[in-house]
Length: 307
Image (cartoon, rainbow, N blue to C red; front, side, top):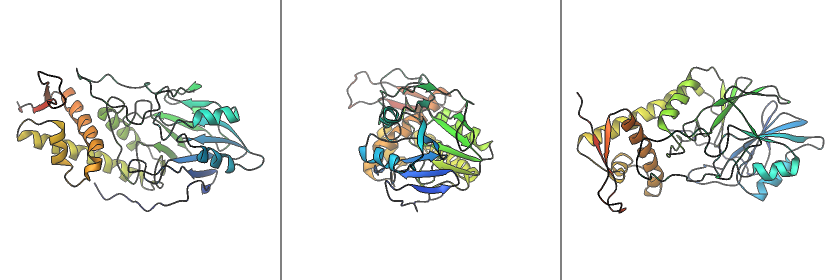
């Protein structure tokens, strides 16, 4: 994968006009997983639609209100997905403004059953209490003061993940970002869904993506192709590693992510697990559970021989 762009350093809490009818307010929650922080978007004027209100943070809540003009009000709140850096502020903002919260569903909506027979962990950073006031079906159209917005169900990073299409642009949440690839952590994330969502976006002609973190993606087609290639390359690395003999997730992670800081290996291991689940569902890999449930004896994965 080509080196992602990291040139993005807006001031948290300061509303910026980034396109006609569109403002962005950066939340003060930088981290290795959120980059500079969560992008909250204010769409339209007068009657304003908020997209991804962000984490539970009173400073960010105040900044969203401060971004409004004297004759403006928030009339609806759209949430791309139920991670804790995107969704928790929706409920306090709704309580203060009376605006309904719209999303695909609650934190478990859209999640696929995983083809595994043991606990696979997961649930990192999930706003498990998230429930919208109104659910949005795939293809639903939302009226805003800046024109209609279409909801596209794009699971993969998260089961209830929506992207929002607007005037040749796409609010891509955490599915497609310019600074990094998405974490796919089962059971909330699903690699097969992720690849299908990328293929769906590749068939579109959006001119720019406004992601949940980082700068606008100004060449969406190239970025989507790059991310799909990256996942196929990761799969090839896992298959190559297993061709040398059975291995557990920790060993595969150390082998494949040898250039990644150790502090990020836990997240990397979740991506490896997502690939292994997908490979297992396709009959290319099998899992051998240990006789004991001791964490010192994790499952071992075997590559099926090519017929």
